[in-house]
Image (tube, rainbow, N blue to C red; front, side, top):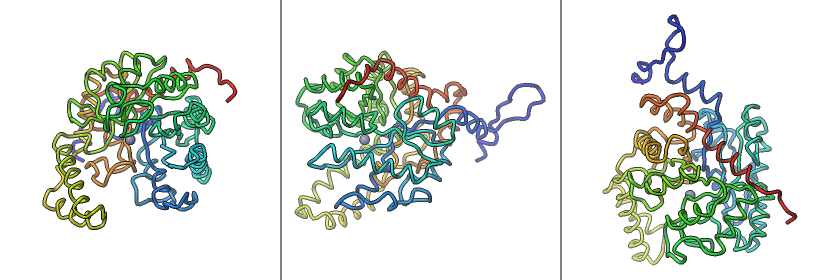
Length: 398
Ligand SMILES: [Zn+2]
């Protein structure tokens, strides 16, 4: 790209050669692990065989995959660490579901020992980065997976889980979600216990997907900083999954971070409106076809051909990062792409895990310093993780 090669930075003495923005980003991502707050790689294992777990050999991440995530592209994207989602399994025996999915992820990492390793704390994450491996923190998406039981939350911790979104897109026994009926006007009494126990264990409380009221309630009682692992700014895109400015400011006073997601319908107003229209039409089609999905899908394809998706670009994501920085501050922004967890539309320029450096180049062109880019990449997240670990209390016997 011409713009990249023209934009140069003089380093040091008068005779120093100009440094391209690309090599500047390359150098800073060698110093600081780039942490992606939300990666749904494991969904591929769990959705391709509804009867049960596929073996860790079934989907080879050692070479390019059909999805958005694999080791070659994680490497090209300079990813140092990510929170990989585990769980998903609606087993009658919930602990078995958590044990099987964390076990599967460990097996997957064990097949690529030079590239990927499961870590359970900040020290482990840094050690993996120093050793040239991608560090995987394991996270649960949707607190209903602990089945209303603090014992199961502790069991998840023992299986290596270090983060959990309190809800997914539906209200549960922990609290209200961004979608679905409001039952508690925020956090439930059980949710209060869950947040206290997560703080005590030293787990990251993740407020992505929670209702605003739930998030504000958590921020009143949390003893440690929180994360929103994959959420954008509502001022720029009105999806209820996004974070209003008042909540951005409240997360800042808590010391937490909002990690910007690359999901198109959480990024621009136009794409969100298109997505909402499509969603409503899908419901109409499903009713018309008596829930016959293939038949509804055929009609939906016609609608999509007649109503093309409004394009979303890398610069639109950069706008969210700039907005969160402006409202919450440079210490309270991070990245949580949601690769392999988004529907088919991909943002131009941010199509898969190889594309992170392009986003850093855009921000560098907008005037971000190396120190600021390092905070966004991983230093803010590592600060939050360290604070969560510091206030954790020694684990009691389960
Ligand atoms: Zn999510």
